[in-house]
Image (cartoon, rainbow, N blue to C red):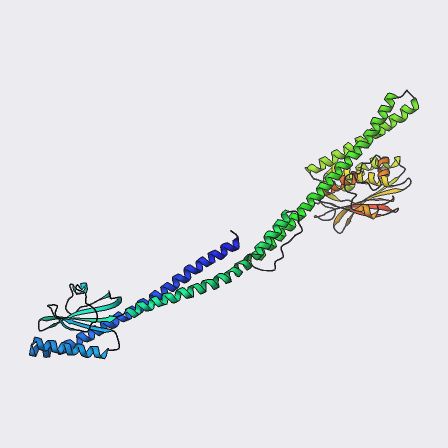
Length: 479
């Protein structure tokens, strides 16, 4: 059963129960009130008759005649009945021998009247009786006249009260049916309208479940369902971002595997090919030297690739102890090695460092600098220069490696930090590169919460800056 159907049926059930219960209570309360009024009126009339009789008792005592008493009581009864001729009023007078002195009833009196049992003088009792499909209210009392007891019974037909209650119930049934039909019709549209946003939410969830992660719920209401829809959209946005990240990471991993396979396959093919050639051909010193040189070169390339991959794997673990170091001093330590490497390519390295004490992992910073310089060397030609400088800029400490090389084209700048990505594959392979250097630099910078910025113009050179956050005073410690 759908949620709107549950709301619909439950609301109808509650309405029917409450409406019927309230209507029955009103009808019964109205009937009881009117019946109570009739009972009080009957008791009052009985007391009026009793008072009239008591007023003439002294006269009756003077005459002390049974016939005279009967005559007087009969006259009083007739006079009372005549005054109430418009109502269904009945009066019955009996003596202590159950002999009827006066009665205007048009129905047969019951042979046994329990209200008269143990009825005391000056006491009034009442009872309701169903006689001949009518409801009669009996009120009885006893009056003592000259030591003789007379029973006065005042009766009133209250059938109309009960018939009125029946008529009210008939009318209520009609009203109840109309009200229920109207309520059912209204609640159908109300319940459907209230749950319509939930249907939209459900359809959107189904679309997202089928892969449409950009689908959103379009609701403008400010109630709880509107809040739920907005939270659902926020959740869907987060899920979409996570899915996109996973897809992007998966693509990067697949590209990494493809590139790694390619980079591994190329030198292995050369090594295996030349090894097989040397194994199967007759000895020729020149051919053997050339072949061994190629095997050695490709082997060194594999070694470089394995070392770079090892660096990447170690950086992914991200468990490093940071200590306070002066970045300028670290550069000074590796300056001889850098200049020796540059000298092989007849390139000049210029170093200009400002003191900057930061929390660093010394070995990783060396790896960062070596890779940045190595990348600059590969992009530079003979007789060009590479500048390594550090300085403070806007409360941040910056390391820059500047070359005068071929630069990086715009279309490659967003991808140069991807593993195995090479803007100039031919030049990279000549230098035994694998496209991992800048990826390693990015990982080292990330570990130090630093940002790498690249500024480059084709055929004019490239500037790669590593910007470290500085919390303490200039020249102090970056926690």
